[in-house]
Length: 354
Image (cartoon, rainbow, N blue to C red; front, side, top):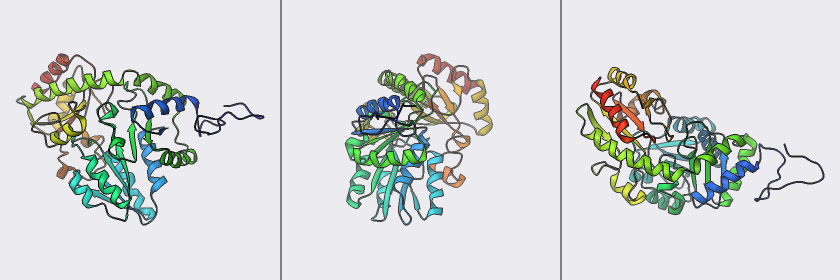
């Protein structure tokens, strides 16, 4: 609540401070920090990552427009895009590789949304190639940078119009906040801010404070998690109970070349791997863990093991999941801040139990 009448306090971008659904000083403080992190002119905080994505869809899409996304992405992102078809929007789902996405971008495309690293197969999208095509046809390009973070990559520097995060993950870093953020140019943020006001999707002040707390250790956390992820990926690759590891830091991974170009020598704190077995063996492994927590989400201080077919990828049609490689033997591991040897011992014990 901001006391009135007689005068009106304004935020630094000229918005009246009269009602926290529209603007709040604590939220605004977080937005300024995120803007610096992403080298953006401005940013907006939302009540969740999906609130941010929904606001973007509504701010830009009109009946008759085409919306291009990779067919591998967070399930709710894809679901909501599909739901827009009832309003005359045509969603187009491309194979998650830059060449295939570019092929779908024509003059009728209004918006393209990609994940810089896909969930859960950790494919790395060549964002500059897609950005070049979007500029040619005048399409808005949005990059979900949740898995990568601005510590490793800043998509706005490669021509992306808006970069978004589920700040629930790495930005907050403690698995105790639900929030989202979008950064970009002032013109685009002003447009999106008007929709946030109407939709009521602004972040609450206490959550903004908690994300600000987490950002103090963002670089330290992310680099430690990247280091541990590389060690664990190499361990799992040699394990007798593991069929395959998906991690762009491994030289033989399909995304390694693009990841090295975009992210330099850091490759993220999440990896996926296939075990020898199926659902029964997966459940047995998850029950045998002592340190790693079987749970969805990622990017926090605790290591979390997720089963994509019953979590983030559950809403992707089964035939599409199979084509993408999201099968019953696949697990996604978000590396936390525990001692890496403790994590290896925990994984080794659980794998030997299947």
